[in-house]
Image 1 (spheres, helix red, strand yellow):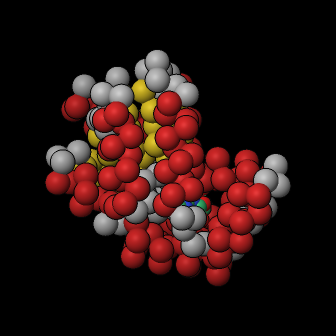
Image 2: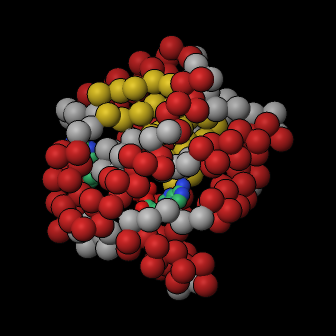
Length: 190
Ligand code: AP5
Ligand code: MG
């Protein structure tokens, strides 16, 4: 079983690379951002609350996202593995994920971090905002998302480094080049 945490700042290419990894390894995609956006589209009670937080670029509470992930894992116990995209985003989420996986005898195989400088992610997200109209792809929210990443999310790297599972990858280049770099990290643990 291959369980990958795909990590990196907003706009680093987590969603883009997830698609390729899912196709190659037949993994179940667990993106908390996508799950929350689907709640917003359904105008559920959770979606209405989450939208206010996401529009500011802040983090939705740990309890909510951990609950969402737990349900998805338990509904897909016979899969080839999972790709966690945009989760965990706090050390508390990382600890909770290990616990949920351990309950069913599973564990994270590796954590791949896409390293992309701020100037590049800002350009990518502004462009995506123009193309898709995603509400949080505007300059003020992007700046806050980068700040939240630095303060609350980047400590998650140390969590996996201590477990010997941290694999940084250069996130600049073509989508195919970056994908090949990720695959060579996966081979190291397989
Ligand atoms: P989330 O949806 O996870 O957003 P994010 O982390 O800000 O990341 P993005 O989805 O913006 O970027 P990405 O890394 O997926 O890049 P992509 O492949 O799209 O979270 C949104 C919000 O939800 C959070 O702010 C928070 O409020 C909440 N939330 C989510 N999870 C949470 C959690 N666990 N806890 C608490 N709150 C949570 O690529 C970006 C663009 O670049 C695309 O247009 C793409 O086409 C382009 N691109 C990709 N690769 C390349 C390349 N190699 N060269 C040039 N362009 C490229
Ligand atoms: Mg994404």
